[in-house]
Image 1 (cartoon, helix red, strand yellow):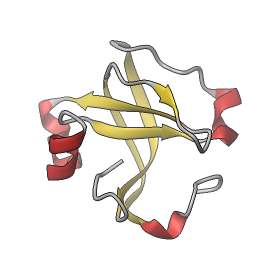
Image 2 (image 1 turned 60 degrees about the vertical axis):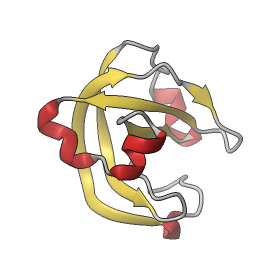
Image 3 (image 1 turned 45 degrees about the vertical axis):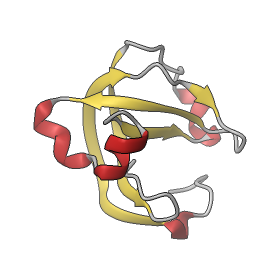
Image 4 (image 1 turned 180 degrees about the vertical axis):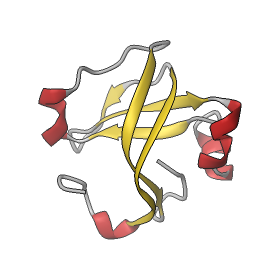
Length: 98
């Protein structure tokens, strides 16, 4: 998890997972340089979100593209259908899964 801010706050649930979904209308650049957004998942992947995702992210999985990866990945637009691969974690500081 190179390039991740304070990686000790993240509890790794799966070191490498691929999901597909629809980009939420909240794509933004965070203060730490990450590009963040929510990803609406299929019914089959709802196990990947928790109650905090449901309450604070409209039921979407929180996604972050760290600055080190941004030269390799174009930021998505709301409504895009995309595939994401990376670690699946719980952010223990905020309580959501990403």
